[in-house]
Image 1 (cartoon, rainbow, N blue to C red):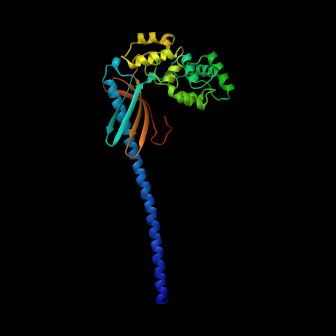
Image 2 (image 1 turned 135 degrees about the horizontal axis):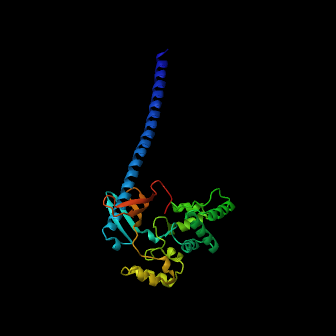
Amino acid sequence: MSAQGSRGFVVVAVLWMLAALAALASAYSVFAVNTAASVYLPQARLGADAAIRAAVELTAYRQLSWPKADRPRQGGFTARLGAARLDVAYRAETARVDVNVAPRDLLAGVFSVAGARDETAAFLADRIIAWRAPPQDKTKEAEAAIYHKARLSYTALGAPFDNVLELALLPQMTPRLLVRALPLLTVYSGAATINPLIADPDVLAAVPGMTKKIESAMRAAAAGPRPDSAAVAQAAGPAKDFVNVDPNDNVRADIVVAFPDRRVRAEVVLLITDAADESYQILYWRDDFDGGAGY
């Protein structure tokens, strides 16, 4: 082989080596980026969880700072946790209608407010009552026939709802109607009535016997000194059987955690226990860290 041919062979070999090194460097850069992202995400997730839990604990602390009878039915606060800002709004779960204990007319009112026709709203209220009630032979057969007619392969469970999303299983329940009704409903208050002083206008509108005049009276009562149950019942008039201002230990906290590079929203329901070893229990936790649906 001539000297020129040898030099050409060496040049080609060097070029191949450089190309191989470039490919290796490119592969390593991709690996490094992916590794860094995989390390960052768990750390960010842990940071979000810690911030949300801190917001929950501050909410519980604020409730426990008062005697039970005097605890705020709603409130809000802002706090800092390192580089994160916590914005929290909370209120007793009796601001919503509990599908497991609410009477039929109140349930029907919720679906009417959500946009259902009166007959559909009454039908859905009946299905909820049948779903949550212990099954009896006659009722079980009637419900089975309704579900069969709707071409569903199941029937009423005969037990309480674990989650309001289970309402999607009811015949004639549409996704659009459920989405509208969800903000008015809960499975955590344990109360057959609602607190009219903290409920949203749509919840108040769902209460049988509620009028604009009574709604105005409720808003006026909420703005003044805390009234007792007797005063609220008197002001509620024909809606009195569906309202109550008694204390409730279940609290829903809407939390926004603002980090320098992202915002995380969370919705947490907690039970204030007053126990020495466990001051609260988390009943429900949902956040949008992973891009979940909004609230």
